[in-house]
Amino acid sequence: MPTIEILTRIMLAIVIGGFIGYEREMKNRPAGFITHTLVCVGAAIVSLIQLNMVQDTVEIINNNPLLASALKADIGRIVAQVITGVGFLGAGTIIIDKGSVKGLTTATTLWVVACLGLAIGLGYYEISVISAIVIIFIIVVLKKFEVLVNNRKNLRSVEISYYAKDEDFIENTVSFFKKNRIQVRNIKIIPSDKKEIKRCKFKIYSSFYGSKRKIIEDLAINDSVITVTHK
Image (cartoon, rainbow, N blue to C red; front, top):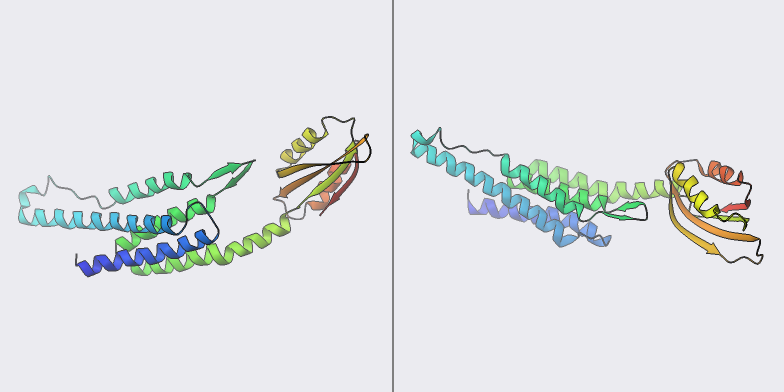
């Protein structure tokens, strides 16, 4: 393979991997510009090595036909190992914190960047460029749409006043949220002027659009609850 062709593929891998990595870097994610660029370039290098191995094998067989049955070149074997390896790398960016999972998007972009690098290294320029444009559109434009939708779903906080004699109130309320597949992000105890009354604020996230009213109604059914307010 000509040197200029090798340089072209590696430079394209740097550009595409860099664009996607830059977006992750701006979001202050664990894997940013350098990581995504290196993954893309590394995958492209693996593809180039695989192609050269195939070419060398074909050349040896042409020069020595008797070796045809002994030599084999599997173009997909090394490439498949890249996908598996990047899967382990992406797992390192996933963090489970207080019942919520973070880093899935970054892990996915690492995997996608590796796929792009493989395509670039194999010389599929059209597939690589079109796919890169689509991926950047998804993580930039559609991500904003996702945030907008989540903000509409998100019941930011629920403040509850309840009778202090119910010592298990907070634990039971958390169980209620979990039962209804509502994530509790934070619990804050608010000082109260009356000893017989306690107040607490739950920061929660509901994945059910339009369920805010039902959540409040279900909480208010509890005999220990005095008031329920939300923001």
